[in-house]
Length: 144
Image (cartoon, rainbow, N blue to C red):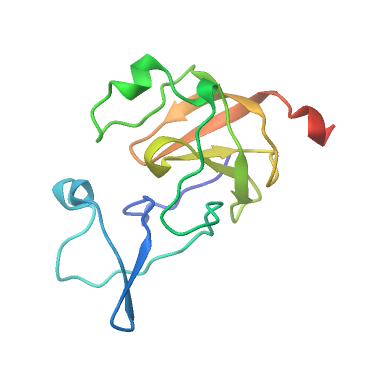
């Protein structure tokens, strides 16, 4: 599994906005409310490329990627549960070589052994506030 450093304060997805030649990223109010970040402070950030190709558009989610249980959650709760099985699309790999997929609201799921473009069926093993860890239960037939 990927080791997340204790210094990681926040993990979320947000579009980059341009206004008058400057660029900004909107920080969700939930990150302020959880004291993950404070207004007026300076932070170091990392950016991961999104698989969304056109500005402002979202890729449609597969019917198996959401359930009535995940749709009825409060927005501040993780959109996955431990033991949940779902299909994901691996968008990129992390520093440790593990696959990274995003599900509802840009929530990150880390999957060891997965590569960009894979579409495995995974089981969620550990859920944290901003990230979940999963294992592959059925490989993408295209990657065999």
